[in-house]
Length: 414
Ligand SMILES: Nc1ncnc2c1ncn2[C@@H]1O[C@H](COP(=O)(O)OP(=O)(O)O)[C@@H](O)[C@H]1O
Ligand SMILES: O=C(O)[C@@H](O)C(=O)COP(=O)(O)O
Image (cartoon, rainbow, N blue to C red):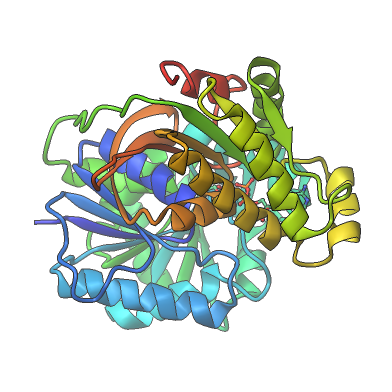
């Protein structure tokens, strides 16, 4: 029986949490987009449904999450995990608060935990404050995120702006006091009407204690860190290697503007032929695509290539000034079209940097279900698509991976 159903709010968040569950020993299937209501649940220990609900209007995010929850519940899944970003990517209008509220109602649960801490990615929480490495969230590069700039590190405050319900805190000293203390504090908070409890965690051991203490909750929310701990509580099978990576030409598509991606793009640029999509110099969307597609046609089949729009805050400002408010969307769509052209020209290994960008590429390629296999870097697993011509897919969250990740991902690609 499938132990856990996970609703992820973006595609790379989905790959991250799927990698964590697989690492915990669960056979994990990842599905992109809302499942067809009549489609059966593939045989697995855990299923992750990755949505594109992080930055859409809150009402749309709620509807998509609820439909996905109903599909999971209808297929016998009894525990739901809402996975959002370990940097709590959201805005004052959502979508973490509204989606959590809707899932609480749907699961008939009075209260749940809010736990983005993922020490494996350097994200920790203390007294409700989120740290990225050794700086507060608000001092990290997330303050410049193009879609969800995070300028307040206090998650109790951030979430209070997203939900009409009371938000409480489970501080680290209670987490460290052990499973019974955690349970008792959660019970007290629930009896006081608290619906969302921001949970501190600094180490994986903290998350293990939280996972054990919340084993009776039908709904949990958080990052890949807590998901791994939850998976480890119910792990049924040993590590799975899954399918092997298809051989063939490789293409890298980067739309993330996160600090880690900018470094990775620099390294990849030094190794492979590359093409930069620059709306400041080519503001017409059709022109932008036509020029990039022509470059790709000239370079396809001659070794790995890189196409990127990744840019610094100044370059992005110039891009938006030239192309207008739809710049992000146009760039995502353009990279999606280029991915389709690359695969049509024979690419069998597709590497994408950026959550929203990955959403656009996977949709453009029409990929619905993948098997999650070995991680290239922490939280960045290779996935193998089903279908007649399987693709090796590496979807990278903006801030994940070592600087040479994109270069390494092309090892073995022609
Ligand atoms: N040069 C650019 N100018 C403006 N926006 C850009 C540029 N390059 C990328 N973007 C947009 O920035 C967003 C990056 O988000 P995403 O792909 O989710 O990356 P991350 O994982 O780093 O958050 C996308 O919507 C992308 O289209
Ligand atoms: O939890 C995380 O940090 C990631 O899984 C994630 O969701 C990152 O989002 P993107 O940077 O937008 O890919």
